[in-house]
Amino acid sequence: MYNDTKRIKGIMLGLAIVMSYVSCTQKKEDSKQPEKTQQSYLNHSPTKHHQIALDVLDASKKWIEEFNKGNTKACIMSYDTNAIMSTVPFGVKKGTKEISEFWTPFIVSGATNLIYTNVSVEVANETTAFLSANWSMNVGKGLIYQEKWEKKKDQWLLTYDNFQVLEHYKTPKKNKTNPVASHIVLENIIKASITWTNGFNLGKGNVCGEGYSKNATMNAMPFASINGQKDIEGFWEKLIADGAKNLIYHNPKFKALTDKSGVLSSMWSMNIGEGKIYQEKWENDEGKWMLTYDEFQVIKQY
Image (cartoon, rainbow, N blue to C red; front, top):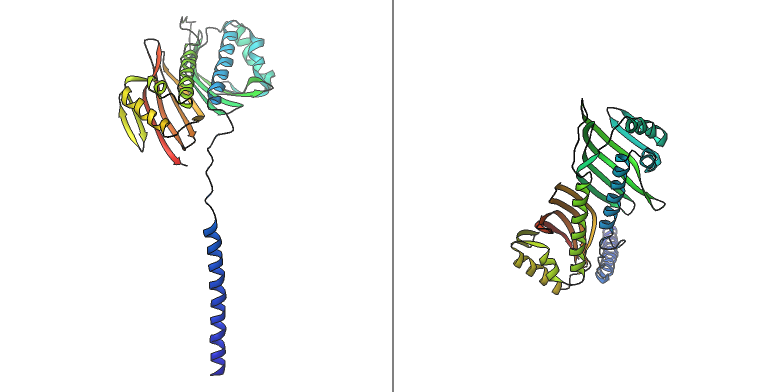
């Protein structure tokens, strides 16, 4: 009987100690203040990645220009010393020596009139971007699966180049298409997007509204699906009035569709939340690049 009483007292004391510990722990957790969520992508300016895309497009345009002039040396100098070039069906070339041994006789043989179409540029970070496209020249056509451009010592260089020849012409063909027309489409879209973003960050809802065509559609998940420029402008004006600012585009991808259209996708953040732009469709309407479709989602609200 005495031993049972002693054992029960011991159990009760143990439970009291455990409950005391749990209570103290709970009080400490309750006293913690919720951490403030910081806006993502603050390591770069709102349109920094737009500018990187413009820089890479410029480097690509210069490469095409030098190729069409037969300037082999300039083409090879656009590759990093340790670049890899994977070509179908010609195999893998490692380093500028092997790459030069591929391009030099090819250009000397008369290959020219290089044209890029359906160009796409994706910005990975401030020193890396990826370009893909369809290509054609007087001797054949094919696909560029990936050109990896990296910024090294203030110069954009090709570090990886992967393309395929789909067709080799029996006789040379001439094509009067502007070799970099697709690049120019993307440049115009990127500049229009920069103007739109700057307008938002300056609190100018009218600039945002004017960036849409008259019959544009905007799906802002999960909040609204809006048709027409007037109502879309009203959406942005209210959002700005409620305090939204500092819109940043991160990891954008720009793709040319035709000589008058292209699309943009990107991650985004602002002071009140972040999300993803699935598609901004930009079209040239009588010389002005405007949004005709806009689909984005708020993934996190701060």
